[in-house]
Length: 101
Length: 235
Image (cartoon, rainbow over all chains, first blue to last red; front, top):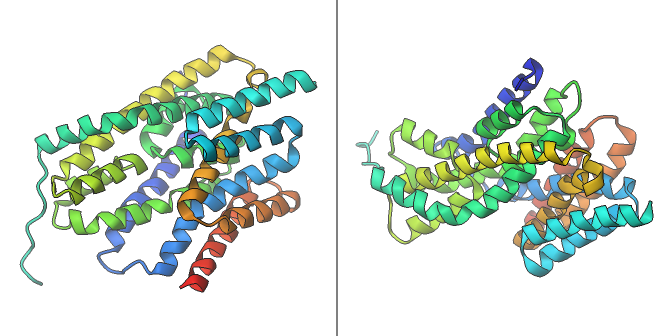
């Protein structure tokens, strides 16, 4: 068991960021209302971030990665179950790599 | 100032009933916790670092997203902005609790908010909507989620070490797989794919042009603005 000081610093800061978000909405509502515009902006943020993460993965990856991403999205839409979607996608990537390499 | 409005109740009984109701959320939390533990191991975090990460930051999506931006040395500004973008939705969750929690002493309010996650927030709002106003429910359901999150992170890290070579089992693909599934779920909830598509397009371009994890921030900003503009157009 060990912990690097620079990583602990990163974790400490990330925790503060997380708390600012958790406490911020409650705290600010005392002084300002969240307008529909800000609401729409904040609501769209996570999906945009998730897209930003998977976009380059898809572009840089090969057929196994494309297959995996398609499986994850398709199964999530179809079953609505994250566990099934992710497990099949990951197994699919591992299998495709085995076959294709 | 008007006389202080009496706050909502906050009792041990409420905490207990929240903890019991929160049990239904635990399988989902455990799956994400194990996945994060494995991903943290792949990112070369030690077991202690992974556990402290989960205990202190306690935000599944944000923790996974920062791992995607992780490097040695850690790009502090980029990972903090990534976590900020992923956690921005908590501002809305907290704001929605204002009418219920107003008048509660700050130590009870902020302790409850520390343990707030998407799952127990929805559960608690439903509880409140059904006329039970004990805020202990929010804390109790949050604490069982938090404890499960931390414990399963540790279990996942151990499991990751046992697995060894991550590429062989496609474990390096866990993060993209989780995010792809999340994207499908988010789009369903938002009824709008444009923020997702804008995020993808901008990130792909910026990733080519700028070294480091900045493409994540650029995509998140661009996509969320598209979401805002789309809303204004519709209104």
